[in-house]
Image 1 (cartoon, rainbow, N blue to C red):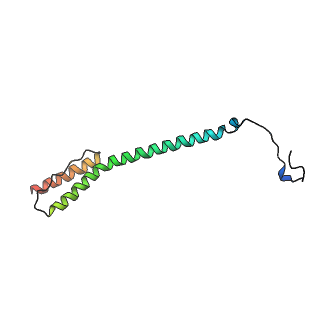
Image 2 (tube, rainbow, N blue to C red):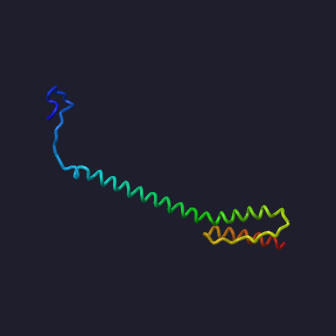
Image 3 (cartoon, rainbow, N blue to C red):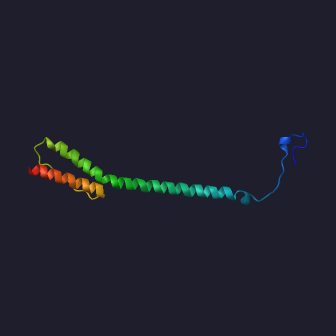
Length: 109
């Protein structure tokens, strides 16, 4: 025991076990490996989510750019472009077919 020289009660330490460095640090190395795996998985999921969001928004970007183009040519005497039907995902397809149908009916009247 240590701490006998000045008899401090808070310094009474005992060394119970001695073990090799590799055994003592094994839990730390396991934690480091788990953190690295979790971080890599998180980065992979973030990249996948970014690609998926880009793919889903591309249909809406096409629709909005066409609508801007149509608005700009509305005042001009040029022929209005035909509204595109996008195939990205169901909601965008439904929106584009509905708008195309409305514009077709409007141009026929």
